[in-house]
Image 1 (cartoon, rainbow, N blue to C red):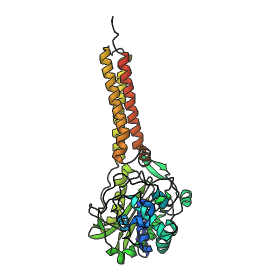
Image 2: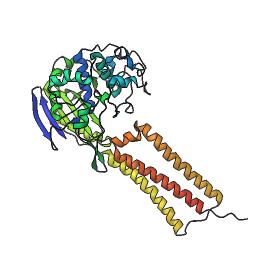
Image 3: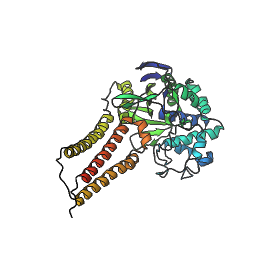
Image 4: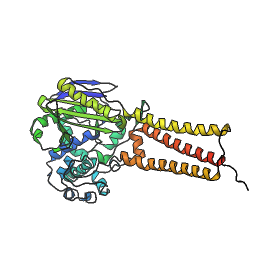
Length: 413
């Protein structure tokens, strides 16, 4: 983990726990604010309909009246669907990507804030179409070069070569994970750079906020914040704080800027998992309040321990039941049962076991909004515990069925 406090002139203070401050971190959704700044720098007409700017997006957008401004402010109605974004096999442009994406399920009417990385996938395509070039060239010219963050990684080949694996929590330790890069997602989550790069960008953007950008219109998120130009705006300790966090499996970043005090804080960590997201996010929040008034709050505990404990506990109970049944059979303490009773109990065990297994395989991904392979990336220890629980359900079901078959009373003639 590395952090800096900067003003418009550069670094005021910095601290790190690790080896090398120049290690590149994946910036996650912090990338969005650089995309919004690129749109501003290019002077793109925000009132323009997206389907006019990117005709390839007609199949993706249910409402053809969605504007570029809707994308910037997350008011297009698109859902946050990580089954469509974060495709680590993509090496083409965002324009090519949106041409192949159908209108996602759960799209709502435009006009209300609804955070979705799909908006910034489309914004990357808008920038590509506006410039006739690559997003990497545009963000470099409009943001990275003016800010001096010229070591920021925008090339997929350089990303694969130079960005080391991040880490996810795994049964109390950390497990290395290398998810790779979605080249069509540079604009929403796959820029990468050192804490030095991030600090130089924040120092430059702080100056922009002290100018006319601080008066830019934001939209109400419904959670005590506004969203404007790729940043949340929130009153913290009586100050307007502009901030955004970002995460991909194994990496977390945070940028918070306080224009009226000429202060910005940046933080990056090469460890992140969904079950400890609130705990890590609280570190960035604490850094902001520490700079504002010296206050901090206790970090919330990781959910991983609780969730893994519950899943493995349930598995242990089921396996204990299976062992108890086998032991009773082996010691001859199992009562002989009628054929009808054995069939009923065996059938009931199969039905209940099947309902639990099928329901879990279909229901859990639906509830968390991610497939099991994606769950493995964000929370591998929880995913392992989930599979152990399902294995315990299957094992117990088999034991119950076999015990009913073996213990049935022979039919008399």
